[in-house]
Amino acid sequence: MSGENEFGRYLARLRREAGKSQRRLAEALCDISGRDTVTRHEVSRWERGGRVPTSWLPHLATVLSVPLDRLERVLANSAHETDLMPEPSPQLVLSDLLPQTDEWQANAAGRRIGKEAAEHLAARAHALRLADDVIPSHDLVTPAFRELRAAVRLYRETSHSEEIGKALLSAIGEFAQITGWIASDAGRHRQAEEIYRLGLSAARQAGDPGLVANLAGSLAYQHANTGREAEAINLARAAQQEAETAHPTVQALALDRVAWAATKTGDTQTAIRALGDAHEAIARSALSDPPDWAYWVSDDELGVMDARVYTELQRPLRAVPLLTKILSRYDAAHTRELALYLSWLAVALTDANEPEEAAKTASRMLDLAEDFPSERTADRGRVVLAKLEPYRQDVSEVRDLFDRHSAA
Image 1 (cartoon, rainbow, N blue to C red):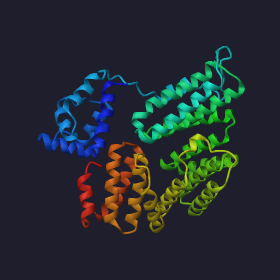
Image 2: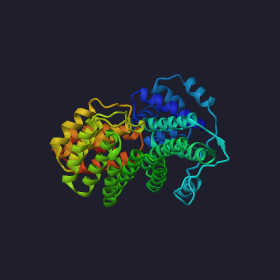
Image 3: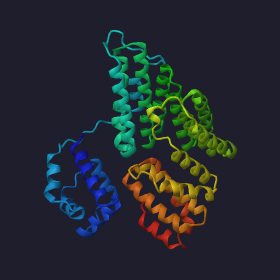
């Protein structure tokens, strides 16, 4: 980990504690220094480790109400290396991970591992999922690739029983799903697709239909959002079939992805029916707990998907109350999801002829998106601004929004 990244994380924490977005911190630095050379993008580079703000430390100390010597000490105690691990190419990822076959082969002569190693691998996969909730994908994608490669090596270079082998393959499938999700959020869609397919191969050999459904549904979701709607609906339906024998929560998630893919293809009837089926599924009792990777699937998350579908179908009177209620209690630590969900509320409010409220919601959404960079939030920001553009001249709140977020 580079020293600049260590300092950057500290700076980001101080900024959030001061209640400032990256853009507002940049504005404050410009005001106090009398210079206009700091932008939101420059602050982002400081926090990502791309640059060290040595000359700005006194101003940062003032704006963030922290002793200058503390900032200097954190920076001085950090290493000065900046050689982050390079991003692996898609070809390197696949050649490192899987031979030219769908058969996974362990090394019978390798060191013997047992249940403890498999449980440790599953725990690391879950830790990566939890990290994705609070760390931007651009910061997490390289560690995610590293974890996935390490998991595959563990399987291929060790010996183990058939039962342990299946547990390891399931963990590899989980790593592939969250790594693909992170890569997709970072805009690396081709890599994400290949990694999802890698995970599908592992999950199938593990005999884990619920995980197969999650991986296929994740890829369907990416297709639906990247102009491949026909592939998305076919894959989402296949995922739904895989989930038929899985936990009700897994079935609900698969149905939600059918609903979204159907919405993107314009099949309103299928979308609405799938939403209803998803709610019925998650309400069913089960003899066991859902898999750990489904921890985030809840009634509220299904409600958000309902509202997103209604927004896409231009039914704002159904979308706005749902989103308003759910977002009033949504975990603010999940910055990216909060920003994304606010974007649909902003669009729904615009469709409901409430541009003033839409502008307020959009402003909050864009502030959050600046703090938590993501290709998905960037895309949604553009959608929101395009939706509000017709009101730019006549509605002061909308005009102010564009003035404040002109770079967006």
